[in-house]
Picture 1 (cartoon, rainbow, N blue to C red):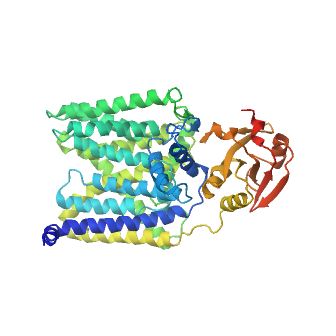
Picture 2: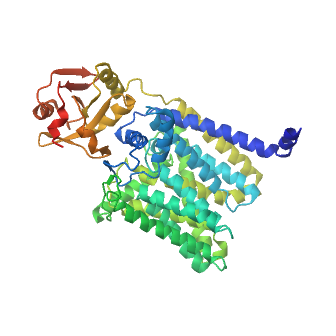
Picture 3: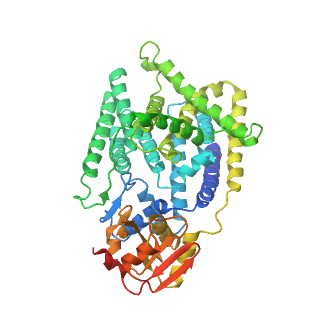
Length: 523
């Protein structure tokens, strides 16, 4: 009777949570299906091997060489948790990014409702869901094949949520410590977070400290001070990782873009924005249904940019009007602008494959647009019907597009792994792109470690790898006959000696020796 009374009293809330859980499960299955359709490369496989090393007791990953964006404190904990449950499985590179992106959506949905009226929250949730959860396939390809920068975005969104908990009077100490820890974690794990996370937060805290007329300035002092301390601590530890017994961090110099390259960066900024937004209609048939969808998403992109313009116009007319500034929108817009500036001005190589540096923009843009439009939708019922129809349409488009995505029938590295295991070849070497992938698809039954050639000699390739790998007994080398010139039969024989056997498997050559070839490295 009490249970019945409880459900009767809270039936709408219960129904809301039930529907939300069902939608999340459906989305999770769709994302996992999309992610599982990719043939994972060694970048995707690396965190699986790192997590395995941690679970074997090497918590600090001593001996490993990781990239500047190491994701050690961001994505890697998710891989460790998953792998501790399942062991090394070939589906983990699809499962873990799916979980991270689902959590990112939930964080975004929660953030979209902050400081809005009850009815406005509903429509903000709807619009955010429509723009982020039912994102274009190209955007999902950038977010569902980790580790990339989605975990960083998840942590930044959560830190944004914590900021607005800190701003609630009397709740400083409940949230400042987790905010500091979270800020340090994403700063240590991903240098990009300095520009899309911590700098916008510092600007936010300084701005409102000086311009907001309130006695609650201590909140902004705590936010700003915590952010600066987290930034300093991350710099100190990143510069002393080896001394502290951690992995070696391969540092990438921070430079500004060369002036001649500036136009290239600007071009790929617009290219990436259009692709990520699903609005790249150039070269498409004018009458095709897919082109109409691209044009619709292009309109959404224009609306996002126009909304940012309106935000500035409303907030800074002739002078700063602090009462007209939505604090969360200020933070979101600042992060949006700094993401663009970081992409344009950073001295990195950008091309058609570097859209991943901008995946925060569609999420930020979706949140900004949702929060801006929701008050107008509340006032006009016709907008309510239109919003629901659009969100449902986008959801069904996602389902339809994902239906036509299929997992590759034949994965060469998987076939090679099966062959190696059948022939009791358990430890050997290969090029970077053929090593960790073969290890992953064999679910660690076969271990292939990456090497590179230089001046007709082979060397351990110390990138996303552990130097201790090259001290273990190995007796084979694999290389791709079609794609890679990093390892050739001639180089392998000149360096390791004449093999006793040679096999051809699915476009790969496998050379085997009846002695330990690792001794040739003289480590």
